[in-house]
Image (tube, rainbow, N blue to C red; front, side, top):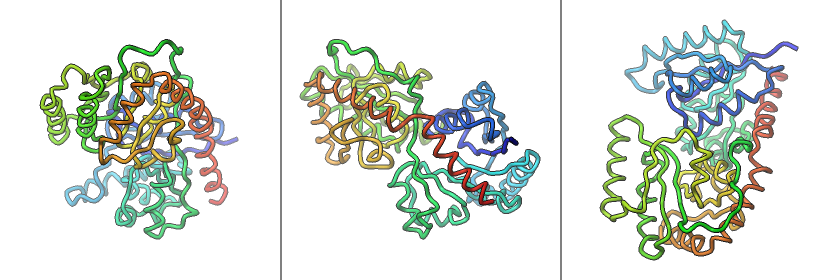
Length: 366
């Protein structure tokens, strides 16, 4: 059987976020007797090296922002190089892990007449759906029902979009043996320190908890990117910790490359932005509190594996944290249910099989 080359576009090659983890799960577990993955990264670094170490062919090709005026000439050159690369490798299908690269997909699809798949990991507006040529995609993979909604609102045929939840390596993220409840109850938030992840709101929640429950500690897991905007936000986060005098109970872990171990140090995950970290925490046997954004409502079974709660007022999340901290046996029980659910819903093999089904339908049709 001839292996069908598939070209993937990654959001970045220099760091590993949730999207990069999900892309790595896909390309390293795809059926290699049927498909030959090639990943294009716009820069080099830890993610590109991770792919190379896993035996995945990786090419570094800068892909300038398509819609910025200053990128007009550069993007044309990049698109030509991308088309040439796809042609050289006899690419049969192109798949972007970042929907902002849709115009580049369209350029390859238009030139080579091959199917294009766009992965939607962000919450879009109907206007963004129109701007980024989703109507030109052959298939769209959304990570939640909420992510699919603006596509339909913008006029995209609902039958073109498949909802496939994020996955997690269940062999790597595993619960620790159940022991006696710990003296301290550790609550964590995971992700780059940036406005979208809402670490400042997390600190406000921590401040509410600290006034009523002295045994709770908080971990902020992640680091800011080296940009003026992200550095400024991290400074605001740290200033807020000082303002509330929480230095003794909030620990900044920095960027972690050992997320399974970092997750085991927690008793509860709080996420205010959704993402694959929900699957990781549940696989590690941790209850999760999230807000109704993105894939959160698709991933958390409210009252069983965790809680989906509004961000405002923050008192409700603070109250729930205190309730779990005061009932550690119940918290452990919810964590056990979370692991069981993760085994049923977030396995890598099932995830990859669903994506491959999308490919097969397009390639047979094409």
